[in-house]
Length: 306
Image (cartoon, rainbow, N blue to C red; front, side, top):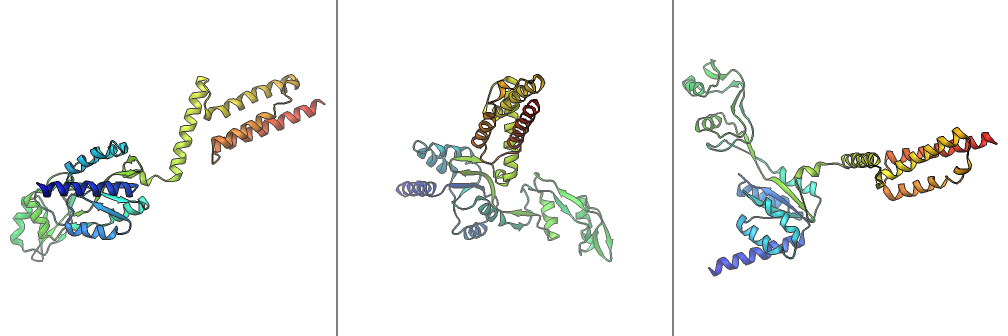
């Protein structure tokens, strides 16, 4: 009992130390990962990350003891399920992800294993003697005898993804020296500085982020204008729309006195644009251009009335 308690305390201390030392964690799936593969992955991650495995019950128990002082660790709990482990890192997340996923090994089909992908038997000569034809026929593999050997006439999907490999299918694949599966670490979730997100987020580029942000800003502006409820994205449009209305009044009536000091709008909008956008968007630049045109039109109309 004393030994178990000591091991538990040591594991808690190790996990706590890693959580404090590293900002990012990959929650990795290790189904069908051999001890040799695990060793190779640890070697590949040397100086870039640390792999920590442990029983899920112990990991959850440890995290729950840390949560009162560090509530953000609660985001890890839902993902501690199945055959998983942690990879801690402070390096570039994409680079570390690529190292984790790069270590794959081909593996023969085992009876009872779930197929991660469709398994195909390609057409071609097998080099086997005709006496084994009945074995192929039992599995529905189309064959013929060519030059004294068995030849598979067409490609055949032997096992569908997600289904179990039967004993006969496993035997046939091994007879044909086909290793259809590749096994390695998979990544189920990423934890970075208190935030948890799926690994697909790492593939989102800056251009896509800016596009999504621009669309969100445009949507907010549209709704705000429709509700006549000013928000930061809509206020520039509101000012420009108001400016245009006044400009139309000036040019149609010839009354310019009420509009003489309206040049301050341009400075105001420029100032607001600088505060609203660290990098000016197309919308902000178009609004600025609109204001410039309006001021130019006002100058022209005033000049023609003199």
